[in-house]
Structure formats: structure tokens, C-alpha cells
Image: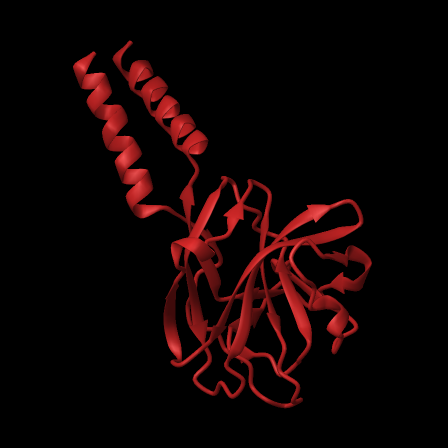
Amino acid sequence: MRKLLTVIILMVLSTVSYGVMWGDDAVYRSQVDQAWSITFINTGMPSQISGKISQWYLYVSPVMVDNYVKLQVFRPVSGGYQLIGQNVFTLSSTGSVTLAVAETQQIDIQAGDMLGFHYNGPTYLAKRSIVFDYVENGNYIYSLNWPTTAHDVSINGIIPSSDMGDGGRGRNYSLAAEVIPEPATIALLCIGGIMLRKSRVF
């Protein structure tokens, strides 16, 4: 029994300490946007867990001009995508970037939520920040009728799904987040670990 309790404690501590990565790899990619007043949503990689976002990871273009970006979380709802939370950044460096989020600003997410981001920049032909690749069956959709301030929604605002698409050309962006699982998720992970341990013993 004592050994079992030790296993549970170690599993909880390891999960809380390191969190879970969510999103595409934040690596160098060859493309960067020039669009503005536009929202992007990663519909291909919904979160598998509930928790809080403690850090963002992105790869920032070396030719970035517009350094303002809103990193966001959306929830699919009837007819569209609801903005659950966002962290706003003015980026000061390029390449591989890690952005820590203060505890009071951490976004609560649920399983099924989706990463996203929004560019406000008013100037066309200004290089934006997060790099991407064109790929077949990409993860992202975006505002088809950009530029549009209608998609710069407030928290709990909804972007109609009919306004979003991939324009016939898939994309993956170098954006990910670290999620610290909520206690219920940690408990499920522990139970799974215990069951796995029992299956190996018996």
C-alpha cells in the first residue's frame, strides 16, 4: 500500500511540474503572413485535457515587422467558435520564443478547445510574426473575408463557422502551449497509471 501511495504522489508531482504540450511544433517554417485583421484557429488539434495555459511557444519570423499578436483559445459551439480567453503580446525577439503567462492571466481550457491567434496590424504587406508551412490537410482555418474587425471578438464572443475556412490550401503554424492539467485530469492519469501497474503485476 505504501508503494502504491508513493507511485500516486510521484505521478501527480511529475504531471503538475511539467504540464502537457498542446499544438504544432514551434519550429522554423518557411512562410509568414502579410494579412491583417484576421483570426486563425487550429481545428485539427483540439485539446485532449482540461487545465490552464502556463506558457506559449512559438517560432517568430526573422523578417517580422508587425510584432503585436493575440494568442487565443476557442471552443466550438453551435454555429461557430467562441473565444474563451486570450493573452496579448508585443514580441521583442525572433526565432524560438517562450512566453510565460502570469498565474492571474492563465486561460482555463477544457478538452475539445482549440488554439488560435489574431493579427490586428493595420498595414498590408507588413510581415507578421508566427511562421507557417503550406501542407495538405493542414490544421488551421482562418478569416476568409479578412480584413475584418468583426473577428476581433471579445471574450465569449463567437465567430461564425461560415466565415472560416482554409482557402483551399492547408496550413500548420509554429504555435503551441503548455497546459497544466486540472486536478480531475491528474486524478484520471493517476488511476490510469495504477491500473497499468496492476495489469503488469497480475
